[in-house]
Image (tube, rainbow, N blue to C red):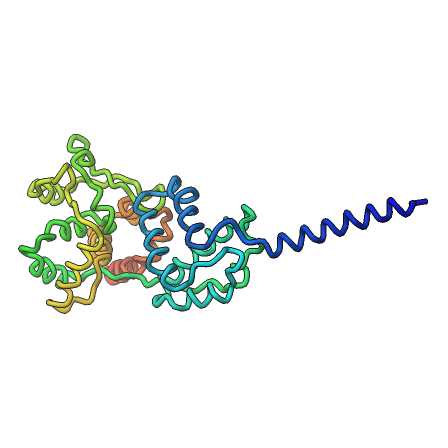
Amino acid sequence: MINIEDRILRMEQKLDRVLNYIDNLTAPSPYNLYEWLEKWLEIYRKPYIKPHSYKNLCQVVRIHIKPNIKDCNLNDLTAESVQSALNSVKTTRMRKYTYDVYHASLFQAYRLEYMRKNIMLNIDAPRHIRKIGRALTQEEQEQFLKAIQGNKLEYLYKFYILSGVRMSEAFSITTADILQEKGIIHIAGTKTKQSDRYIPLFLQLQELLQKIKPLNNFYFPYNANIVTCNFKRIKKKYGFTFTIHSLRHTFATRCLECGISLKIVQQWLGHSKLDTTANIYTHIQNEFEQQEINKFTINI
């Protein structure tokens, strides 16, 4: 039979556990939102991603998170406030990227018990339908090449068309990446492991690079802001409707038009999956197929 003193002791222990639970529910987190985002970027992202990707994450925090949500203790953060902040991001593309940063950083805080609950469970992930870019037609390509004559970034734009690299990939190319004896160029990719790759040193590429005087061993010592602003001025002046990324599509399309296999084009572009290349350039394949069909004749 349990005596009265043991019963009282057990009741006191249960009461202590309840009080501790209540204290935990109301206790503030050791971090405020802004402070935690900086810590998350520095400790949990920077060591594991490429510098360019880290820079992009920092820009998402600086441009699309901090201006749209007030700094507060993590445990005072609500799903409603985060949802409202996400709704303030104008484009669906950037809204998706911003959501990914919220989701990863706040879930990490929850796992480390810096937050009482994972509020991202109550937020709908924004939908973004990726637009498939287009290549320049032969006529557009000729018009563009005429438009950039004498432009300070003329060689860079030509390099995009002749190599198919992403905009930021060109900025890191140095003299050490040009392997003349092997006839290849090393491209330090910015996305998947496969995006770090080698492409042939085509004759036109070789001739182009010979015209460039590298600065501190870098062929294209620019940044995304300089290139984007320059390209916008060209578009406005000449009424072009394509984007810088269209130059990458142009390279791939010219390759396919020359009969280069889709698998090789995939490797040169740095796509991790053949399906990615195939989905983007299906229309080119269909055009080739139609041309081959038109050749079919049998005398019977």
